[in-house]
Amino acid sequence: MEKIETRQSLDMFDPYVFETSVMRLGPLRVAKGRYPASRMAQRQVTAPTLSFILGKTRASTHIHLDGAQPTELTGQFGLVHFIRKGTRAASHWNDTIDAMTVTFDTETLEFCGRRFSLDSIPRSTLFFDPVACAVATDIAHDPGSGMQSALGYLLHRVLREVESRKAKESDCIRRAEQIARDITRNLPNLYVNGRFVYDDAFAEQGLRRAFLDRFGCTPHAFALRAKVDSAKLLLRETDLGLADIAGALGFSDQSHFARVFKDATAMTPRAFRIRPIRLPS
Picture 1 (tube, rainbow, N blue to C red):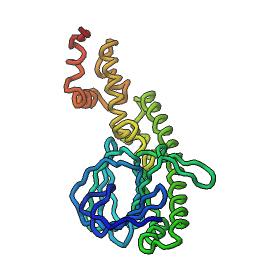
Picture 2: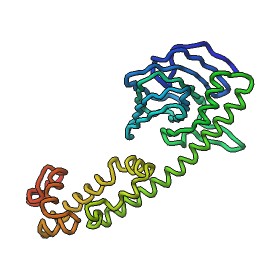
Picture 3: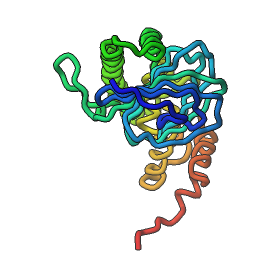
């Protein structure tokens, strides 16, 4: 194991870091740093990076990845964050935090006789594992002769969790896509007594997050968009009256339909129907 000089910055975080030490173990670069409260720092991650939040700080942290919903976390100890190479990220926190990062110089690791592709991990995996962070704290404070075996255990534990979460996320995406299909097939019956029929299903945060990531909007917004798209077809392709279209699509009445349609298109349903269709030139 080679110990590298103390430095004043880390690739993973912002150059506000101080008291940084870096060690190298084969294809792994292990760094410990202290990060004062910072403003929003943006970066592009240049290598697969695993971060462990150490110490007893209870900072509030905001993390925003390109194309994903912002995440806010409070109570930092136990937070484990994997970010894939090439991900653009922005983050800031309101108190000093201690962290250990492991940067990988390889895209593939071997554990227990099997190969693990870091590139197959979703671009950001964020979870709490106080045991993993306790092991990381020991490694950071006392990088002695047992560091290699401790780091091996740590990586095995975390990557096993990442794999498990990847499988769960795939299942959530599959379920989200199925619900989206059900929504478009069942537009008249999506609300019962004013309540969205999928509210209970989306109380599961993983499923709700998968839906947001897959479709870029909430299930409720998706349902309204599907209703408006269907309304456009009915307005163009049929002679149905506005009240009949409102009833067919599950709006409470014609006024409700007109209000939602205008909010989405900046036109009333009647104006949309009589507007000439522009053919491509």
